[in-house]
Each structure stands twice: as structure tokens, then as C-alpha cells.
Image (cartoon, rainbow over all chains, first blue to last red):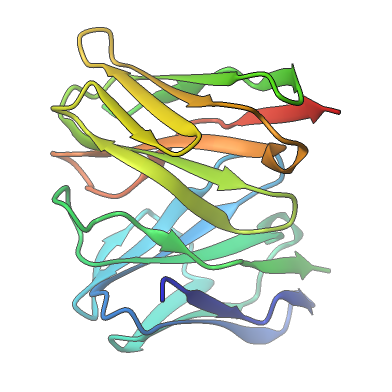
Length: 116
Length: 112
């Protein structure tokens, strides 16, 4: 099973709303990632969690707040977003962080977020 | 630093071979990956190659790595219409942030 499940698939939210994106994997992976992908662009790294601890924050605005409640779950809490934050948000997981065998990352199908 | 470049578009006829190219700048890259993204979908890992290898073959896919020139290619044999997608190469560097850095993506269009 190489599945990473993201919910919801689509989300429309107003600029004053608070919402959360969810990601789940049951592969026993200890590294989980959030990426943001704008149309016709490659994914851009936002956050990396390793062993449930935040290890990388790519200078993401505080209106995006990640959370890793346990080794299988990763959330992204959204608050006071701007229309330019509309994008496909991708979650990924890998066995570990780094460059050794087993670090290939598996991606979920993404959440298509529209901020109005 | 990490910088990965790809050509933006490739069009081939069904049954032909497709070759998608990628160049990277970080000589410390340990693993290089190819991902496929269909419209509206997430990224599907196709294959990867370790930096001490020159070639890897997996069914219709052949990955060639020229480490001296920092050039990576993905060859798809007998290309099918279902192969139409965006293909991203990606690297993980041995130093720095140690997370995937993606190329700009190559849109492959397969003509029937």
C-alpha cells in the first residue's frame, strides 16, 4: 500500500474563514511534507515533519499552520488566507528524510483550494 | 545551490519513443526521481536512480544519468495516449534542506 490520502479534494473558503486540510498515510513513514502547487508550476515545498517534529519551514506565512498529531496524520490549518493562496496543496510522505534508499516520496491526490 | 531545469513541451506520435530531458546543478544530489502528473491529480512516482548508476530500466521506462554533465533523461518506449501528462524530474541533495526540488515540468502530448 503506497497510498497517501488527502481530504477534502476540493475546498472553497472565504478570506475570514478557518479551515483545515488533512493527510493520512499508513505506510509507517516517518517523514511527511506539505507542498503548494500553482497552475502550470512545479510543487514548492512548504513544511517537512520528521518523526512528528517540524524540521523545515520554508518561510511560509503564519496564516498556514501545520500540525502532526501522530506519525500517520498531517494537518494544515488555514486562517485569513488571500486569493493568491489558491492552489493545489499536496501532501507527501517518505520512509525518512534525507538521501538514503527509502526516501522516495509518495504523494496524495491533493486538495484544490480556492480562496474567495 | 539546487536548480533543476526541463524543457516545457514535447509532442510525439503514439507508438514512438519519447525522451524527456532534465539538467540539475547540485553535484551532491544522491537520488534523482521522475514523477508523472495527470490533469487535476497528484504526483505519481515513476522511477528513481541513484547517482552512482548510469542507467536504470523498468518496463517501458529507461532512465539515463550523465553525472559529469549533470544530465538526466527519461525515455518512454512505445508511447501511448495514456502517457500524456506533465513529467517532473526531481532531486534530493546530500546537503541543504534534503527534500525534493522539482524541475519546471515537461508537458508530454501524445498524438493518436
